[in-house]
Length: 280
Image (cartoon, rainbow, N blue to C red):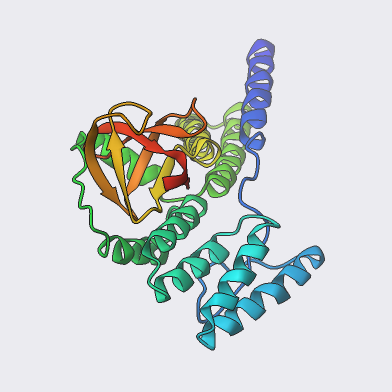
């Protein structure tokens, strides 16, 4: 019995470290805007009040259709830290001035921070519909599609918080299992504890996956009006095909400074100048 309790405490420590080890990636700046908000209504700390006022000025410029001023304000605000709402509003501004490529770029960045936000995803799809290149992605196994959809339901912080909640429920179940004298309670607590433990592990795995996407950022958007994808990292390379602004690509080789090897959703690969794309 003593050995079981020792093992239980050791396991609890390991899981606690995993649950609390997820770093907060999204900036604490979450500013509410009734006309442009993407749905986050966080309370602000005193240190963010100045940024809140700056964003309010950007929102005011947007409402006045002064998109150039709004863009400048939002981009200055993003230099202080990333926030999904600011990226979303910046994307709206670029969409209004018909700069579809930068609208897509900022919607994609907003979606990285809030992958489950339906408003961001809807605006992103509307902007994508205006692009020239219609690239069909390679079909994936239904299990992979479902898994990705599940992971993208929440952000890294949300999954980490869920992991903490599940861990607390796991501890409660363990206490019931070890200290209850009723057999039925022990059985229920054992079953429930097993479920909570699995959910703790999955939550942390999903949070780690979301964090990896935020830190690596291997995707990019073509910003040049058009760019020739070449077979080698040189202007003398054979032209394989042409991409237009707004197209999303994956950076496959980032080792060179002036050229990047990219891969499309349909599997095509090639080289493009670094200045023609911008990393999400």
